[in-house]
Length: 351
Image 1: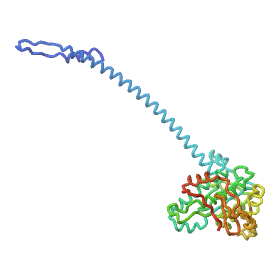
Image 2 (image 1 turned 180 degrees about the vertical axis):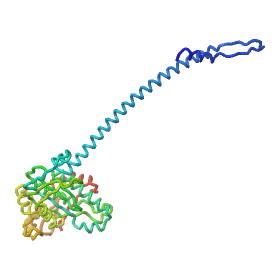
Image 3 (image 1 turned 135 degrees about the vertical axis):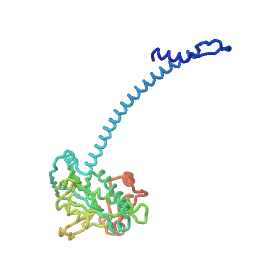
Image 4 (image 1 turned 180 degrees about the horizontal axis):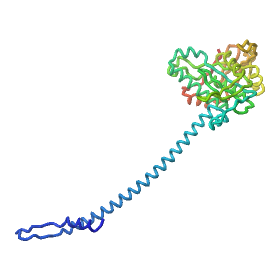
């Protein structure tokens, strides 16, 4: 402040002092007080300077905060965009997802030979009637989370789930010379994981999920149908035949058509195929079909020796031969990540 401020402060320190005889009035100055007040004034000036510096610092921090928030917003937006894109790529083949993302029209595509997998839960109607709706949804979520993890492991494209049915395909979104082998291995592992998935984790007495599996190989047309909640659909007789292979399968068994069996002999010669003979398939007529990964027990000398994670049947007509390509530790992680309690891996038995 200026000299006038200092003079004002000094004036406040001049006071009237009456002497004892009250005959005169002496005006005196308390110099100690003046000195103290001058020091106080100096401190006030320093305080003002500090306040100004604090204001400047506050403004700088505010600008930095706004800049940081803008950066975070940009980073958050980028992360959300990446997550949305990843979700799109999980629902559609990459080239289809990119076309949808860019607003381009998706044209139907024909594939000469794919292998389509179907599975469903044995006794699902009874299970659903014995559980609450939320329990049913939790069971399916645990089961199909494991299936999804296995689909990534085997590089199998998941098409969709319909109720308790799971549909997957190979050699569709990318060229896979071993597409039928991949589906066979995927089928073996989905059966394993189903037999480790509890129907109700709060009631162990309800047991574990049992599925039946079927697959078929042939030509299809793939296309995106609809604009609201668009679906990636497969069309053709191959889809219907694959579904029939599943519906004519049995608990804990993998059923395939003759075309798939022929491809398996070339792509996966080590996996056994057991002829089921000729069946009258609804809508298809007579077809020769096969059980996958089974051998006639009369021809198997080791049907009483079971691998830890294998699938076996003792005293029946056939036994599972080839076990999974997934290690026990990876398999356990898949189950646990899906929310299934894991104790000791058990072996599903053909009924």
